[in-house]
Length: 378
Image (cartoon, rainbow, N blue to C red):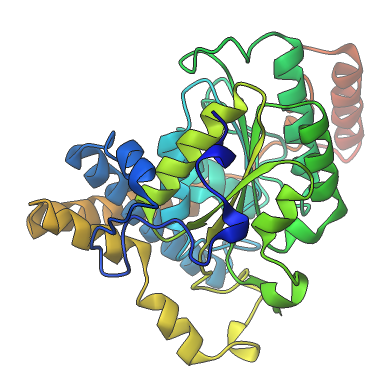
């Protein structure tokens, strides 16, 4: 069954939602199937999801402080978008590959990337990628807008050619998720990825976090139609979800990914909001109102899931413990960052190919010879 068989986003007037802004369950005939999927998550699972969001929030804030103190060249916050990400993270299966943009901190941490591995990108100390065998299929951040829409689609087409999808067994069939924002959705690469995904029935889900602003341009200016309707024009199944609802994100992503494994690519528009700046080089007070920011702050995904957990009997002490553990981890990251050395300049050659390559070996030697020409002070 494709995702389109159970949702018709073109006719929807509201995104798929299982938790309202106050953390209360939303039970309607329209969301019954999604509630059934979300029921796979135990209370312990939901508490762990909350803990991941809190951890990411603390990490995010501490990284912003480091940038303001001159320790990072740039920081890209994900404040407010943790709900969409945690649902997708839990929906993916171990064999899946994730292609992020540059704001998917929660997904990276969920997959085993360390805080300092992320930080190293933004302090200019990492010249290569992450080893996907160590990061459970999490690929390196892509800071060039939407280029990875093509990389991920090509990778998904390769999965099909290798016979690693389409067996009908979701426990082994592989799939790919590509994450980008509403601004990237306007890039040509994003459209080309959809063309190839649909034409070759690639096992991929495009997960678009519509955080309402592409730097200073509102998403309503970027597209006259909802983004999920655009995807259906390419022949790709699409769904529209409340991106601040972790349960809806989990249920829809799980269904979309399992459909993709059988050759039905999908597209999810997660309706969320960037509570912080686009990056630390941006001042959002120049283009949006405090009233708008406050209206979305009342829909904070962390507060929403915390309220839901209290309804399920989780006490405040458990939530407070998560906050303390997250604060401790962020402090450790800060101490490690302040004590970190500069990366070796020849790291860049180590991540081009998975196996040693004579051309990279030669270029690495040439760089060493060049730097040696400075008498060891390069």
